[in-house]
Structures are given as structure tokens and as C-alpha cells.
Image (cartoon, rainbow, N blue to C red; front, side, top):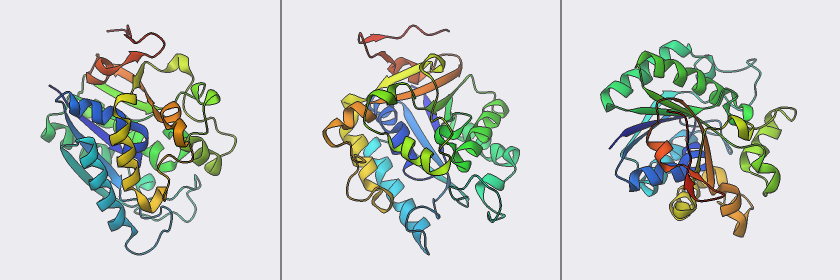
Length: 258
């Protein structure tokens, strides 16, 4: 069994983008560690105490997913604006990526992780903390000499055929001209998480401060269509997430490069 470390920017990202994968890994006996760079202090309804609320929500969500350990790096939320003007000096996006990467590499060593998961180079939809998490994760994987690391993304072509994904909504609010996610051809690993949609939806619902009363984000009965797949780009050797991957058109394991 493997230990997989997920590096996320804010509470709720773990459930929305990787919740099904985490639940499947835990179900198969793998150990999952979720690391949050920030507590999401500048999320919806930002105010005194929101960071503490979101930490509690994250821990509750991770329980639904079977996470073994939840870690907060205690960097400050940078807010959604891509502009650095007005950003706090201790914001995650302003931190030296190599310094934070050293923190993450130390966690990889302590947890004896076999693989790391973080965001794609554009942070899925352009949030500055997501982009920084990509930089940090890429450096940490190299520092720790990990054999496998993954970028989580969304398949932008798949999104043309389903109800609007929350990543597309968030991306439009940050930069309307920026494409969300990655094209299908660049995605190495697609995981069908429809078998664990109940814990994924329960995990999303725990983030009440951000998602409100509708954890389906308006997709309702079509939640499976929109959020029943999770997408990755794998670097290095095959890992535990590749073993979950299915060709969703035929239900057969994907043949991916060694």
C-alpha cells in the first residue's frame, strides 16, 4: 500500500477536485495525507474567524473521505485577484516557493509518501494560490526525489458537454479570457469516481461557509455527470492513482506509459 500526499491551497479544494480519488484510495487501503497551504481566510464571507471555521470544515470533510492525516502549513490566503497589489506580505502566493517546498519535502519524508498531488501549472482556473501550489509541489517532488507526482486538473473539453463546473465559474470570475483546465490529449489519468459520489458530496457539503446549502453547485441530479470524473497529469512512474484510472467509454484500465 502507498502513502499519497495531496497539496491543496484552501479547504474545499480537496473535496471538489480530488474527493473521489481520495475516497477510492482510502477504500483500497492506501494512506492519504492532505496538506492545506492556507486556511482560506479570504474566502466567501471573509471576516475574523473564517480561517478557524474553514479548518474545522476541512477536518470534517476529510473524515468522510477516509483521510489519515490533515496538515495546515499556516500560510495566509492570497485572495482571488491575480494582481499582487494589495496582497498581504505573508500571503501564500508571495512566499518563496523553494522555502515552502522545503516544508512540503520534509512532510513527504516524515510521512514516507510515495506520491504527491498538486495542481496543474495554471492552478486549474488561475487562482494565485493554486498556481503557487503547483510551483511548490513541483519543487518539493524534486527535493524529495519522489518517483511519482501528479497535477490535478479538469478536462476542459469534457466540460463542454456537461452543466457548468464550479471551476469554470471561479475561473470566469478571476480571468474571463483564461481557459480552464487542460485539453483531453494532455491528461494522462482519468479516474471515474461515480462509485464514491456519496462521500465526495458529503465532503463538499461540510464546507458550508463556501458552498452554501447546495453542495452540487446547481448540478442537482446531474452531479455525477459534472463531478463523477477527476483528472490528472502524471509525472514519473505509475502510481496508485493510475491503478484507479478507467477508460470511461469501455470500463477498461487505461494503458499508460510506464
